[in-house]
Structure formats: C-alpha cells, structure tokens
Length: 105
Image 1 (cartoon, rainbow, N blue to C red):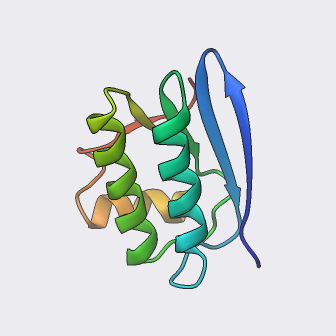
Image 2 (image 1 turned 60 degrees about the vertical axis):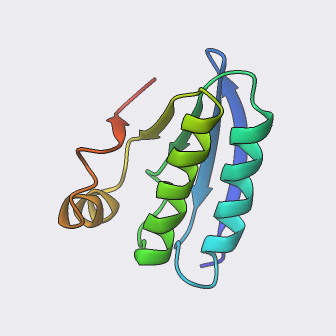
C-alpha cells in the first residue's frame, strides 16, 4: 500500500497522519513531511501512527530524526496511537522509553 500523509492542526499541534506501510521505499516521504513540520510548525509536532500497519528500521530512523529535529527547534515530538505492530517495533528497539507516546493529544 502506498504511503499517504495528511496534515492537520489540533490544539496548536501539527499532526501528521500517515496511512500505509513505512519501509525503505516510503520512509523518505515520511522523513520529508516530518522535517518540514518540525521546521515550519509554530507549535509541537505529532505523528499519528494508527494508520501504519508495518514499519521497518528506516521508518524508526525517520522518527528518531524527527525527534532530534523537533528538539533542536524547541518543540515536542509526540507519537500518537501507534498500531500494535508499530508499538512492538518501538518496544523491541527500546525506543518506547525515548519517545513521548500517547493515545490522544
């Protein structure tokens, strides 16, 4: 499934809503959207991961890069409602303790 990314504003936070698989071929698209949001958002940045059924290490690396970019910009980087498979990847890589993971904003 091709990756689709919709953006919205919610309570002053820019929320990215990717839908589809995040893998080696689609992670550059997510990376571009995340970095653009971190640079251009007036508030914090969140990525809602409920629509992502599969994420490989390139997707995880993209999220880590987004976390670093948001920290440099003085913004919070929040992962919202990760699907069970994405949460498992974050737990296996022990990044669930690094990211701010929430069910809702």
